[in-house]
Amino acid sequence: MVLMTENLNVLQATQLIIEEALTKLGYSSAMVELLKEPMRIMTVRIPIRMDDDSIQIFTGYRAQHNDAVGPTKGGVRFHPEVTEDEVKALSIWMSLKCGIVDLPYGGGKGGIICDPRKMSFRELERLSRGYVRAISQIVGPTKDIPAPDVMTNSQIMAWMMDEYSRIREFDAPNFITGKPLVLGGSHGRETATAKGVTIMIDQALKKKGIPLHNARVVIQGFGNAGSYLAKFMHEMGAKVIGISDAYGALYNKDGLDIEYLLDRRDSFGTVTKLFKDTITNKELLELECDILVPAAIENQITLENAERIQASIIVEAANGPTTLEATEILTDRGILIVPDVLASAGGVVVSYFEWVQNNQGYYWTEAEVHARLQEMMEKGFENVYNVHITRKINMRLAAYMVGVRKMAEASRYRGWV
Image (tube, rainbow, N blue to C red; front, side, top):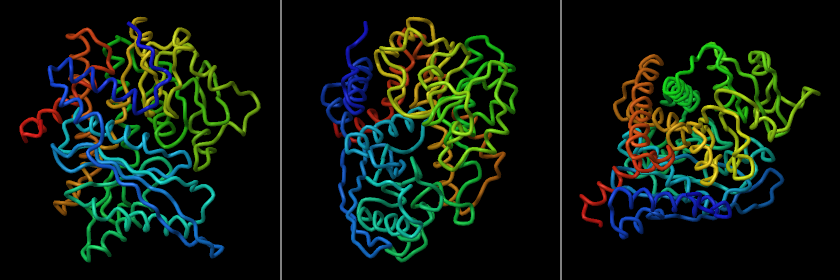
């Protein structure tokens, strides 16, 4: 059955699957009510003196979905289109990711409505520090641990850590993850999401019986996750035949020159402007390939184009790129979907490693980080895939069932429901 939900926003669509997952697991309607919304969300107003001496007021959010398992964890995004509902939904997705890979966290997420591309270095620093001052009452190493997200980076994390350390009057590297190495960051953090997606591609190919060598890969999006993923796939012998950015897409059936494209992309992942012979993002998604990786924005594979998708496997590196209707259609067509809450969990896994290292004051090598990441991601994939097969449900619902169970059980044991 295909549910007509394409007109729902990202939060409503997420709540629909949460309810279905909990119901299938046998939990009460009270548990559904508890877990379909964040336990708390804080809205803050941040006054910042701009470089021209004017004062601009920014709106920020911090959502904490559920802390029954442990402190909440999740990124902070700087983007002009941040909304409260988006931040709420993303905090729920973070809870699910942590549940799937068995981390001692609930989900959190933050965002500020701004356009960092139009702000100076100093303005970004003032905004980063202002946000920490505004939310400092509800965050901390044992409460809620932020991290980088869309249009934020290790420098912004460093400013936020420094501001929190000033407020608390002690050094607190374990307050935030995604920091520079010299401030207690972890090896492998920058590439963690792409590494996790690479592991998921390898696992999915094995289930489909497709060899990785010369497998045809199409990647929508050439930002942090997309570009590193293209690099890893190329190095492992796969053939990256298509990539895209916000301005268009490149295609070559014999494989693109990934090293050249990586060298020419700018800091926002733009490279197609340098080429005349481009195709559209719409055409890119419908290319014949073995693996399609949506690594850009939400709602890219919908009721409208699901029948024309020609990939054998879809691995979602972006948040919410495939609608619920499209998921049903693709699953019915025999296409294996590795959903976002599983595929992109590598980032939070290595963020957890960074927090553990900060708490211990003992730091791991890159090889140790990658080995532990591989083990946790493979275990998460197997758990979700087994539920998908045994329950005869799509991989997205299976991932939600695996992800929500730990949180529901922790809430039950605490006597909340």
